[in-house]
Amino acid sequence: MDFFLNYPTNKLPDNSTQKILSKSNSLKFHKTISNYSFSELYELNGLSKKLNLGKIYVKDESTRFDLKAFKGLGASYAINEILKDNPSVSVFCTATDGNHGKAVAWSASINKKKSVVYVPRYTSKERIDSISKFGGKVIQLNLNYDQTCKYANKQSSLNNWALVQDTSWEGYEKIPALIMAGYLTHFQEMEEKINLIEKAKVDVIFLQSGVGSWPASCIWYYINRYKKKKPKIVLVEPNESSGVLNSFRNRSRVSPNGNFQTIMAGLNCGIPSKNAWEIIKNGCDASMSIMDEHSKNAMRALFYPIKDDPKIISGESGAAGLGGLLRCINDIEFSELIHHVGLNSESRVLLFNTEGDTDKSSFDSIIKNYSFKN
Image (cartoon, rainbow, N blue to C red):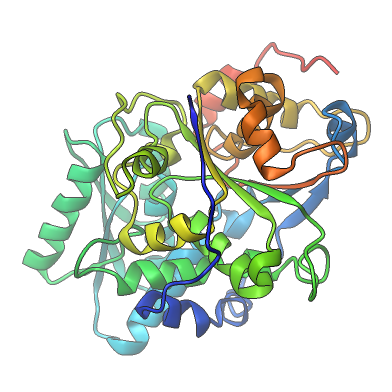
């Protein structure tokens, strides 16, 4: 089975991550950045009718800070907090599969600092070039994601650089928590539309997951705001890189057992983040995996809209949440998951387009000469 059903306690761990998230003023901070604006929240009425659902909402992060991805929210907030404590930091370092590295390079540049970004062996030239554009020194290693993170950590210690990694491990938890705190902005942006005071206007949320920091911030937000009344939350990963799904099956954090060959580069990660896992296991209702074809179908569904739905430019990782929803609806094997989260013809579903066409050549090859059959 490519899914796991969880029965969450909806309790938040009492630790340093919880304290950092509780004190977050990310929205106030992000409003001080010159090119900040709310990302659009769209209603896809044509697609929801086609899929026999009550509503489909998509929070579109493809235009965030001109980075084509949401990652700038976390990196900018974390770097700002680091510089408050230590203004003398001159170089920020990270390991990345693309969007996070670009966000760190951009965030360093707007603070007039340097950045060094290590990328794994499978990172495309286009993703590397997009990091370099923001002043980052990019070094590609013949290593996988987990190994690249360890290398970046070692080099940061040797060179006295500030490591800004979006995954945590024993002894390295504060900065990943600050990144998670930065992500809270785009949930707060929806507080006048769907995240209402007493109850959310959505029933089920599908979230793509890499190392888990971003979906954990979402889970934290909804538990903190609604307690047991929070929407049901389903995490979606690539079949060949599903660290969260494997960790649920093993009842502890483990690395994915796939081959790490997937077009969903932003989700092609390793073992789940330590502090994220503590939140995920207490608040996620289900975990599932999809194949590349599911992501492609979702990208096309967003690019070729039904009737008056808006056209949304979504990259391979950005469309994964919708890919998970489509697989649940179209694959009879997922009927148990559908029942578990109460997905039905009245359900209001929230999705996030976490990236646009961050790898343009890959995007074009998937979209070109294809017309979504309405």
